[in-house]
View (cartoon, rainbow, N blue to C red):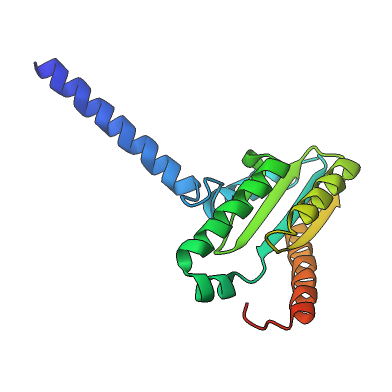
Length: 170
């Protein structure tokens, strides 16, 4: 009986530790990597002598969706975008780093294939509007600059969306 109690407590502790590890690295809403795992990936990729594509994605009009239809509808849109992004770029390369911000960091990808993936994402964003910025380099040196450039390009795309839609609610 004592051995049985000991084993069950060890299993419970193991399961709790696994859940804590999962929660520290995964976004619960989308099941993508969270900001912590994103930062860890940057550290791993920094200086890697391999090609790298970075795609920065932001949902357009999420505030309006939350205001007009409620936060559950907004969460549905976030989950939908997470699914779209992870389907195109492979889940292991995708991160939800903020409320409506996603990043895909794809190592060992050739430029043509990466650009095709980004174009596929843009086509999928007809139903759920997304602002997209993407950068590709033949090595991962200067990854922070790449992320900043992809972010800047995404904001340019977002500005075009809001200037065309005349909707100032972000």
